[in-house]
Length: 97
Image: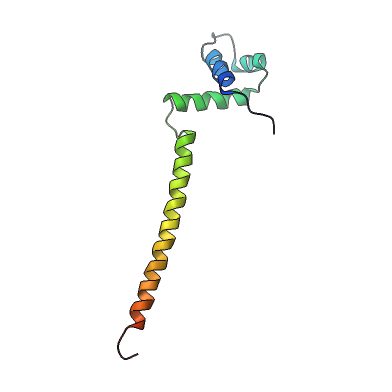
C-alpha cells in the first residue's frame, strides 16, 4: 500500500480545488497534483465533513461510535450471564425440590 499523503498536502489540494475557476475541472486539478480524481473527490468529502459543510460522521466520531457499540455488546452479554445465574440460583433455593 502506498504511503499516505501528508495532511498539509491534502489540505492544500482541497483548497486549490475549491477555489478553482469555472473552466478548470477537478480532473485537471488532480492531474496537476499527481493524484487521481477519485482521491481528490474523497479528500473534498472528508474536508466538507470536518468543516461542517456536510452532515456526516467524522473519523473520530466513527471510532468512538464503534468503541461504544463494542462496549454496549459486552455489557449486554454480561447482563445476560447475570440474569441466567440469578434464575438458576433462585431455582436451586426453592423448597421441596
